[in-house]
Amino acid sequence: EAGVTQSPTHLIKTRGQQATLRCSPISGHTSVYWYQQALGLGLQFLLWYDEGEERNRGNFPPRFSGRQFPNYSSELNVNALELEDSALYLCASTSTGEGYGYTFGSGTRLTVV
Amino acid sequence: QKEVEQDPGPLSVPEGAIVSLNCTYSNSAFQYFMWYRQYSRKGPELLMYTYSSGNKEDGRFTAQVDKSSKYISLFIRDSQPSDSATYLCAMSQASGTYKYIFGTGTRLKVLA
Image 1 (cartoon, rainbow over the protein chains, first blue to last red):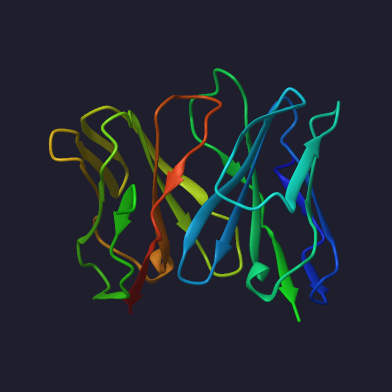
Image 2: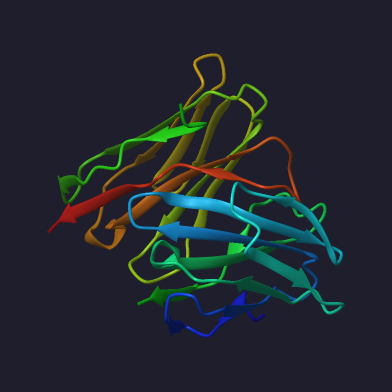
């Protein structure tokens, strides 16, 4: 069974540009979560999508947005990039009734220069 | 005050030692408690998943939850160099599809 896949693995952008990160959940999983892992800050909750709807968002500015497609894959968009957006962005998936914790992808390392 | 507090370490121990990793939390609504292990340049992988208070054992790993003290622990027996990683605690108010709150992680190094 394929795990959670994220692309690209690495992304280098210039301040002010936009970044698009992609995530494919485990087959059968309907919920996708996005987390930001910046150095020294741990995993910060960004967004949660379930059945195509945004269910919750963390304490991040509106320039962080995303969507979930009918096949449950998801996209995270970060507009007007700032240097402090440099981090590892992790996607995780689970399913209603799964009850056994998230499965994470390997992440996209975003570097803003 | 953060919802979940975790000592960042680093923690260095000799091979074979018993390791104790801990987290405290402030939200009494948390019911589900997880421990994840994260190797460098990888995503976190789930180690242990427990509900409410009590102990859970899986091989060399034991997870303990004390809801009255808002304190959770992960014990690693007979630690191995391959256990060297960052260990993250996570908590949730509900099972299945729900957001988790993570600690900052404790970096562990097991010396051969």
